Length: 303
Image (cartoon, rainbow, N blue to C red; front, side):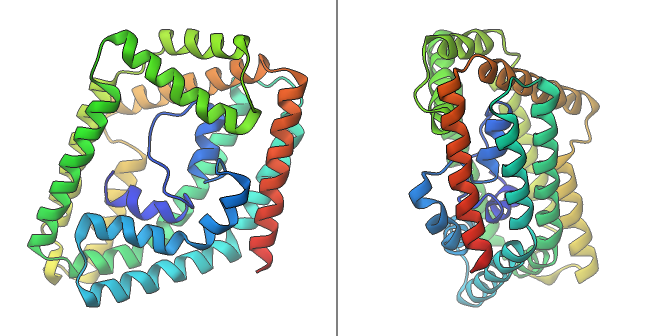
């Protein structure tokens, strides 16, 4: 993960890894909704601490930085609780109306687009705090960041690039199945067949995405180096952070942007196919799951 994805773990509620998750399941995972119901409220309330732990592991903050980051994370969560949770509740209510029926890929993508907009709103809100922390970093902390990048890269290769093609495909199917079952309950043979078929036909290319991961990391390092230790004016630092955020969310390379859009469309179609293969009982289970999430968010919003 890079600096942006780490800071966006505040929105993600529990810092989900940015793996390729199908359709609306990706949206729910990013929004932090696919936690066990008994832990959702606890995870949300612990988000500033979890996000600090994640970021500190990447930068090894000094004492003065730690105080600033903890305060900023707490403030960001307060803003999120007051301004963003009502939108989550509304989104969950809409999903509950859709899930008993068959859905289209376009409907799945509409949900993804809505939540992506919420992610962008949080990035914008976090921008000044991120810029202030960036300006306080030192050269040794960028070395620490490079080490963490290398560790994450090794984990990615182990998860997605090692073993036979059949092994890699099987691992992806199991990952997707586990996430789907958090929403629908136990999948039957028809749903497992959909996941296997769609995964086999997917244009997902771990090697290409790994190359993009490396490029994005170098972009982070190139962007941060001239900004650390207060080398740049505050407005220049914030503008550079904003540019980094935008490049992460919207790649400037047309070919990469086209590939990412194609994968998003494919994920939406896969989720629609999976959902449309579910039974009435599985859809009822999904609605009940979202109802519990909605109640949890209502409780959090009222606190």
